[in-house]
Image (cartoon, rainbow, N blue to C red):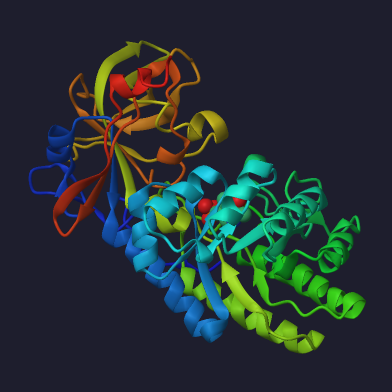
Length: 441
Ligand SMILES: *Cc1c(COP(=O)(O)O)cnc(C)c1O
C-alpha cells in the first residue's frame, strides 16, 4: 500500500488545537459544540466527506475513464443526509437491508445506482428492493439467486445481478473483518467449484441478468498487494467463465476496505496512488488474459467517513485505583461506539478542553453501561487533572459508530451534527426518552 508521508500527531488535517487550548474539529471549537448540542455527540465534517468522495472519483476516473464506478458502502454511516451528499457527489451506494434502502429513498437517492449486498436477504427484502427499482443485487449464493429469479419473474422484470465470489484471499486483518477467505460466510468460493456453478445457474435463469462479479476481501486493509492478489484471482475466474460459458463480464467490483488512521502508528493510505496501482495491474492482466476490460467498481465505506467523524463525551466519575488502573468514565460508551468491545479497535482520545496540559496519566476510558467490557479504549494518556465535566473527544468515529449504535441500558442514541463552512447543523436529532418508549405497546 502507498502511504502519504505527511503526518500530524492529531491524525487528520481537520483536527487542530486553538489558541484557547481547546481541540478544534473542522475549524470549530469542540468545547463550544459540546456546550451547544450536549454530549454524547457525534460530529461529522461534511467537507472532509465530500473531499474523500472526490479523491476516489477523480482517481477512478483518471484510471478507468468512464469504465470506473465508486460506491459508498453506506453501512459505515447510514442516515438521510449522507445519501443526499453521496447523490450530490455522484457516488453510487451499497446497501445491505430494506432499512438502508428506505433511508436512501427518503433522501431522494436514485436507487438505480444502488447495489444490494448481504449474505441473507429475506424474501421481503428482495421484494422491497425490486419494487423500488434497485439497480443491482450482489447475490451471495445459489439459494438467493433462485429467490430473486422467482420474485423478479412474479413482477415481470429481469433483475440485474452481480455474484459475490470468494477469491480465497486472507488479508491478515482482524478475523471478524476478514471476508475473502474460502471458509467465509460470504459469497461462493472459486476453490470449491461453487463459484463456477452459480455462474452457470445465473446464466440459465430467465429473470436475472448477470452483470458481473464482486469480491470484498476485508476491512482496514493496509497492503495493496492484497488487492492485486484478489484481482489476479478474480480476473483468472473471469477468463475461466469466458472459456466455460462464453460469458463477458460487464462489471467487476473489487470491494472496499482501504484502511484509515485511528492512531498515530497507522499510516495514511494514499487512495489515489493505490487505485492507480490497482488499475495498471488490472489493465495489464486483462491484456495478458485476452479478456475485455470490465467496468471496475470500488466500494469504500470507512475511508469515506471515518476521519470525518469525532465523538464528544463529558467525563463523569474518575476512579484511581492505586497500583492498578485509572478509569475515566464518560456519558456514552459501547452504545455509541462498540468497536473496542467487539474488535479491540484502537482509537485516539483527548481531553478536548485541556489540550495544552501534559498527558501524564494512563487510563481506561469507559462507558456508562453495566458491562465490564464497556470500554472505549485502554491505556489512553490524558492529563492527570481530568475530572468530572471535562470534554473527552474520541477521534475517527465517523464509520461504524452511529451505524452500530444501540439502546442497551435504554440509553438514547446521540445526535449527528454536521460541520460545514465554520457552521454546524443537526443531521440526526438526539433520541429522547419518548423515542425510547415509543415502540412499547
Ligand atoms: C463493509 C463492506 C465494504 C466497506 O468496507 P470498508 O472497510 O468500510 O471500506 C465494502 N463492501 C462490502 C461488501 C462490505 O461488506
